[in-house]
Length: 162
Image (cartoon, rainbow, N blue to C red; front, side, top):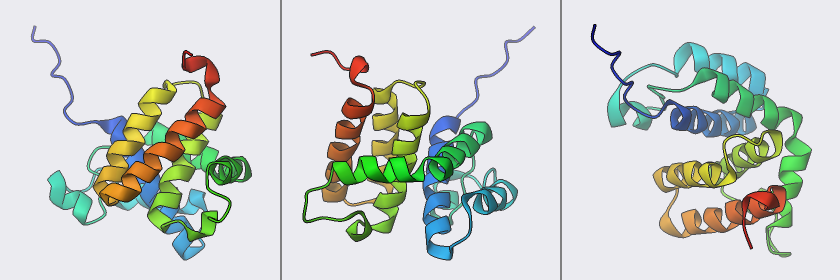
């Protein structure tokens, strides 16, 4: 009997990419996160293949339960997530001034850090940094790294040794 082949790709990363895209779409269109989640599951997740699919807004491989959990947490914990992000911005910078993709990314990460202890904070940071590098320029990705790191340390201090 042959062992089952290992799945290729990174479905949990795909779920996070889809969550960032869905939060961006929700903010831009005014549709609820739940409505956008249903649209993504029906029309974007699992569609296409390769890099071209991402360029067309598709997410070929995504762990749907994680995608839904991130969107649900972002919707139900939106005030807390925004407060965590605001607390990491300089006094002369508002959440509304952030690039909308960066704002969606930080909201997804904050919701995930607030909602669950799994995966570890370092995994959350690394996953969203990978996504930031795919969507944002180098300077904005470095900024995202600083905000993500500060949020993770504040929300999960026990995971970081001193």
